[in-house]
Image (cartoon, rainbow, N blue to C red):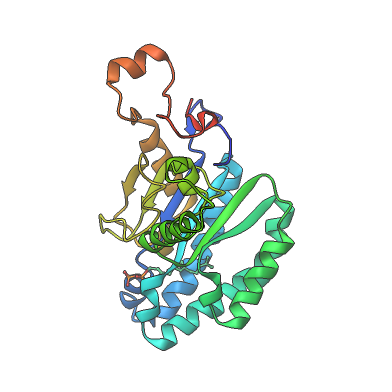
Length: 267
Ligand code: FPP
C-alpha cells in the first residue's frame, strides 16, 4: 500500500489521506426538477470538478470516486450511454487542469468493460496525468468490491495450484496486491450522498477502518463547504483500530494493526 501520512490542515485539523465518495442522488436531483436523469449526471460531473479541486487544495492525497458500478450496467441504455459520454467529456475537458494541478488519474474496476471510445479517453487521461504527484484521483469504473475480492482470490488460487504461491505467504498485504486497488492505501473517510446509509459494494476490503459519513443531500448539491463539514466530522472521531480509548490516548498515536504497512498509520 502506498506510504503516506495524514496531513494537517491550516486550522490544525487532520486531513484524511484517502477520501472515497459514493456520489448518489443524481437521478433524484434531476427528477425533482422535471429533468432527465442524464441531466442529473451532467450536474454531478460539475460537482466532481469541485470535489477534485477542493480535495487537492486541502492536501488530500487520494480521492476515489464511485463513478460506475458493475451493477449500473443494468440501467436503461440511454442512461448508461449518457454516463459513458460524460466520462469522455470529463477526460477531454479536464485533462489540462488535472495535469497542471499535479493530479494523477487512476482507475479501479474493469476498464475493459467500457465502450471503446470511453475506454480510450480514460486510458489517454491516465497516460497524460501519469506524473502527477500531488493527488491520485481514482475513478471506480465498472467496479464491484466483491468482484475485486473474488478475482484476487481466484488469481491466487491459480498461482497456488501452479506452485507459484505458498498458502502461508498469503496475508492481508499480499492479498491486497492482487486487487485493482493495490496502489491505494486504506480508506480513511467514506462519504455517501443521497440519504441512503449503505456502502453498495464500494471498497469493501479497503474501508475496514474507514469513518463513514452519510449526507442527506443529492450529489449535484455537494460543494466545497460540504466536504469541509465531512472532514470536521472525521476530526471529531477517535480512530481506535480495535484498541481501547485509553490505549489510543496513551500512545499519542493510533497504530494500524499488523500486517498493514506501518507507514500507513494515521498520526
Ligand atoms: C448515482 O446516482 C450516480 C451514478 C450511478 C453515477 C455517478 C456519475 C457522476 C457523478 C458523473 C460522471 C462522473 C465523472 C467522474 C465525470 P443515481 O443515479 O443512482 O441517483 P438516484 O439514487 O437519485 O437515482
